[in-house]
Length: 103
Image 1 (cartoon, helix red, strand yellow):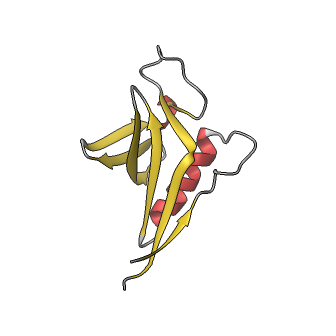
Image 2 (tube, rainbow, N blue to C red):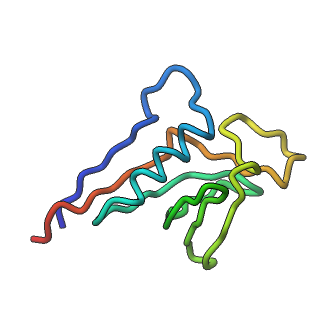
């Protein structure tokens, strides 16, 4: 399998907003033969697959099943350990995959 891997927020100096991250994930997930993997922090740090992004939610799939996370519950900033209801998207951990060909 030949893949193109994009890391759109890896080298950014200014911290991206939730709006810019979810917008990029939404745009990428609409294209054919693509996948997006993101690093989130809730209670623990966790990698998960973004299956789609609606106007109000991130739809994720991982080993624990399907999840819908409201975008207003997300942040891209550091979160104190007491903010358990907040989900931190780690922009530098976003991987945008495009399947180019199968060998």
